Image (tube, rainbow, N blue to C red; front, side):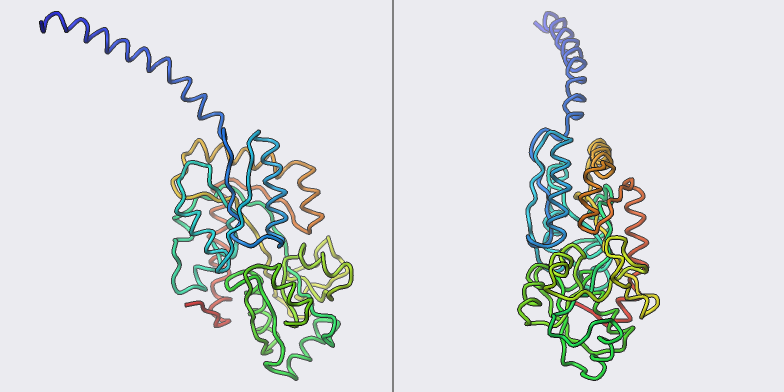
Length: 330
């Protein structure tokens, strides 16, 4: 019985090897078709703000060039940390990605006493997406039309005025804290769950000023609903060259937002390579660059390695500013 079974066993092994050889190209081909279903993209900020507008533009372009839907899911809270925690815990299959950036991945490691994730090792950094400065805008009833006038007003009235932000740990919060230090003023921080709600309270007069991403600020300042006083980059933005840089009054003031296409840790190398390729096509397309510029953002593609290195450098640069501000979230 045993001697009769041996030839069958050999044929089975040989057949299995042949079948595997035939299947291998099919497996490689299947991997090469990524994505072959809908991609979930977590925006860790609420709908209605600049990150939402720009994310939807980016995902629409990725939908176009990949042939699969990229769906934006807003999951705000804790300066972007709630959404990023959800991303860190997702399966590393390339079908749950999200919007990382300066808030969650360069500011939070210093600002927060404890994070639910490691900002460096729990993620895969695929590319930067955009960069843009923030803008200081004030309620029209505030009797200050320039940054020097605002500083003078705040110094005469310590603790009387408030500024809103998209949440503790965001660049908008850090801009306010840096402004307080450099201008030597006392203003109250009021955190919100995103830039949209903060802007609504500014318009209603519930707060006096906010540091907002330029797209959200321009949407209200251009029609004259709020007054723009300054941008937070080292130099003026080419989008709004008539608005001074705060650094013209406070030399050295420089905080701009940047974002990254980010996945959970341990994404397969072939998926990282494919996502990098798709991101490059999207971010170097003339139509997306133009749409970003209309929102005051500059499309920026980087390799995965360069994106990680940039994140590391930004955390190191911002840590002393955060510590000097005394800002801390327990």
